[in-house]
Image 1: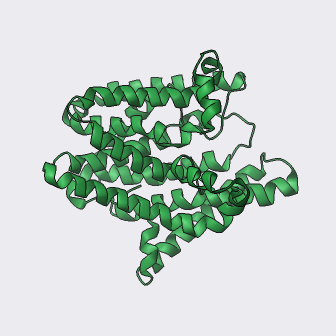
Image 2: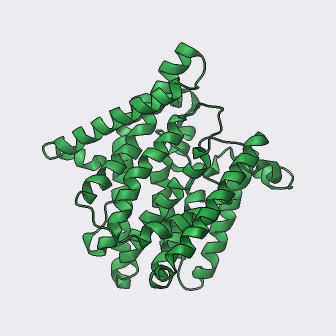
Length: 347
């Protein structure tokens, strides 16, 4: 979701922009719940890998330059990255504040909940990604060096298990002694915080360190492994759904630990040139920041009050309206950002 220094972009990185633009609509499918609130569909489990790969792309692009800089310049580049990310967050936070104040009931829940939703959750819908990216990048950049190279993956995996146990695999976590106490005491949804982002950001850096060796792997073997991981992801999601553990807006699945990196590897493996890569890059950011709020407005204030449930065909119509309105708003913002400078902070 980040603008990246052109010196670290190569021809093959255009595949990232193409992927993010296409997958921004996959994320929209999840957030608009296109098949309804209670319906399982084959697309749902495969949509799970979108956000993990988003994290890996941002991490890969950041560390591709960060790791090549002299030690004296690393902190400045880290601050620049985080600043850019937080400005993007702040822009949309202010734009959507009237809606989120009502939707999140900030006035009633108080100041602690307000700030908690910023750092450990979503202030406006889907905003958690931006804050989780900033915190996760700082965490990995500062700790993943020296002996920390062996500690960070362990911490990242433990964070992931914490998120897994609270969400999709809660039935297993509830059998432990300490995890239910942690979940009940904190009242934090870990799957939408930096706790889940660290493992994907760390994986992005692993790809930077081992890029040549990983790209040398045969494409047929990698593609076969990816297909197998998608099958595993499907059956994991279906198994959870059949046991009442299915969650529509959740990316924390064991199979994602295979499917996410394998798909990222396939995207990285592509060597393509796209004439309008920058436009796609900017539009994917705009689509991500805008779509979830529009979808929630339609769902909460139009579909549910009028029809009493959020199912087909209204959920599909909500997706269509969200997609069209987001694209139009995105294009308008890009067009007028040339005249209105503040709009440049929108993407």
